Image (cartoon, rainbow, N blue to C red; front, side, top):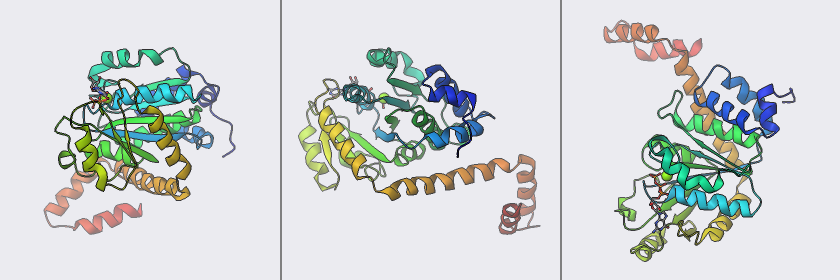
Length: 294
Ligand SMILES: Nc1nc2c(ncn2[C@@H]2O[C@H](COP(=O)(O)OP(=O)(O)OP(=O)(O)O)[C@@H](O)[C@H]2O)c(=O)[nH]1
Ligand SMILES: [Mg+2]
């Protein structure tokens, strides 16, 4: 673990934002250098607190993230954001909206915002996002916020793999508890009832009573409730059981191993085996056993 950092990683450690942006691109594109880069960065990670911020489209995740950045900056914390949903104002089709929303943070060296331009990326959304989070950790950010829409298994996995997950709910968008996609409420460490200024907020709050997780009411547009949200996140950070990190790595190792194993198969080999199986020349169980032996 004590090998000297690669030149690019050294620049990241020195706080060069352009080096960091370049490294992010290499990781996002799964370039050939990415693995060495991540190996070199890894010994410098383990300091940041990574929070997944997820919820229905339009619940206010980006507005909330921006308000949380301001709150964290006031507390002297350095913050990095990864926005993984192309529909997000941080990324994809709505980059302009992102620029407008995030304009207040653009000149701040203590803030780094990265949009994941690719979706269904090589190797999957969750592994790539968490590799990016490692780079940001190495770069010395205290907090890493990962915004992802809570629709679809890939996006839910991104949030689930974060050490702490905030699920953002909002009233008045067909977003009552019954309508919320199964699987997303379960991954919450804290609920954020955003748009608390809107009709239906009290009812939604009542509906959430049965869920044994803290709930914080916010109005992201005015930053109401943001100190309370930060306090709730700080509490989670302080109470993180040490084995939570081990659980995270156990899940990631399984994912990484499966990814590498599949990547080692060449298409012709798979086609040839499929042909033999379809023709009943061979069974799939034996084939898999043979592939795992190599
Ligand atoms: N009234 C009210 N409007 C809000 C609040 N928070 C966000 N909004 C508005 O809700 C709309 C959606 O906010 P976003 O922050 O883009 O929501 P999002 O969850 O990031 O949306 P996607 O990334 O597209 O899923 C915007 O017009 C915001 O100004 C709030 O607390 N109260
Ligand atoms: Mg958004």
